Picture 1 (cartoon, protein in one colour):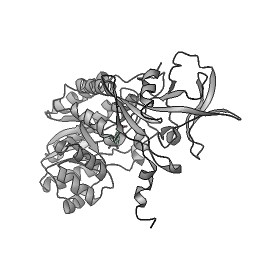
Picture 2: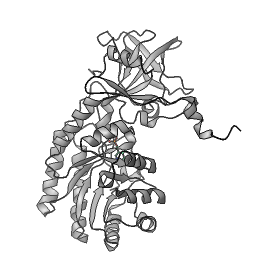
Picture 3: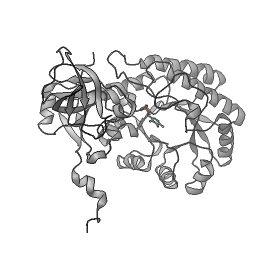
Picture 4: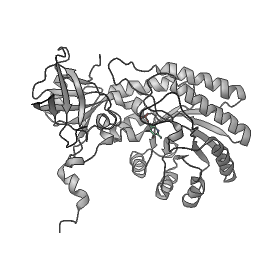
Length: 415
Ligand SMILES: *Cc1c(COP(=O)(O)O)cnc(C)c1O
């Protein structure tokens, strides 16, 4: 059974100050999980998690993770700006973008971020616009089919990201000629993987490339970036992955492929988003109407613009009715938002306790790729975000948008 991190009483206390809908984050959950990750990889000197900002671009969350020793993985100019505003600069930033603009490269180099190059053609481009730094990462796309599949990414063969294996050799040689002294390899082949085999398999691919490239070019590789992709149990029958098992699998390949070949100083980096945050955020929304036609619908005051995953991927998000945690699921509902789009459904034919108007729904696992994917379709406004602190108090960490925010970009239009 999935347990909400918020009681009905606490939810009502927050709602008395901050109207629904809003996303709420669980500070203690985020901290405990992050510490466990760092502990699991503590065998690797220099291990570092660069939290994928795109998953939860909320400064309070980013600051919390930074205080635990995490860096940030940025993918755009604005995300770099967010890191800078938080005082997170230099090698605490991994800049993993694609189709990157000159402006973005300039800013990344200015901040001293580690640039993760997505294409070989970007070597002269980076040189021309920002200069080639001494340390650089290359994104590897091994192509082919990757067995540990995913609905979000497709197979590597069809993925737009990264350099091919022959291009890696060529790129390393070209970058050495430009004075690069330290290299890393990054790869991201699957998303939301729920078993323990993904990171070890990916690590073996990256470590093998590092071993071969070291032999071919004599370049010095100092980090291997396993990127994101570890999943979370969205469904009640799933279990959390065993991060120690994952780490142990990576360690085995590390020793077999790198250490045995005298490559001993490679730091492991990760850019986890979902694993770090998804279970520690929830969307809190209120039941506002019932509608009984061919099916029974419960309308809530949130909509897909607050949480797009169900509409976009048909993703499952568990729902708990606060105060009815122990009631029998005796009715079947479609839980729907108010967008003029029929995919605006948080749950389809879901068995739930009998709902009443005003019931508070706790939509689980919205801490990553939740608020972040928000949009303004139908003139809907982005919700507030709240942090439930470790000591039980709560804090508004982002106010809800108002119509003024919606109209702000039309400044000067009306006169
Ligand atoms: C999206 C993304 C991540 C985070 O992915 P999760 O599936 O949330 O762990 C990490 N790195 C890069 C480059 C990404 O695009």
